[in-house]
Length: 156
Image (tube, rainbow, N blue to C red):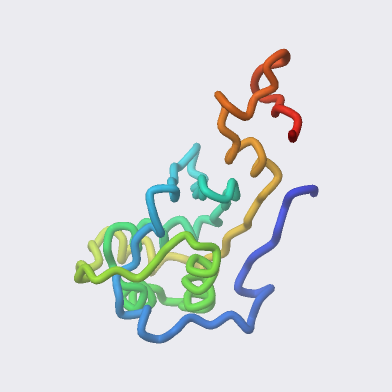
């Protein structure tokens, strides 16, 4: 599939996250990181690069816990099967989706702990860049004047 990049812990076993980040709260890497759930599927978009990421159900629950302010180590402790969590957090960082924060982590909500304990698979994400040119384009200034959006103006 054109524009599809596979990025998953099982495919990249050498990716390791620094141990210190496991105890820190992580936050979106900036205002260009936006996320939304669509019919049960979580999509995270990096507006600065145009790449978007699909999360499997386990990754969506982990993301929910991280965005609620829980430290990755607390998330790992709540998961009965922690396989792939370090790699997943490393991938989030490598794709500039999250950064460590100085804010104090919050306790994991019981409802999230229950969801995490029920996970049967490792969190994984898939990255896509097939729409990157359109996502990062300025629809006012980068549009072909005669044809309009979404046709980009020719390079000068």
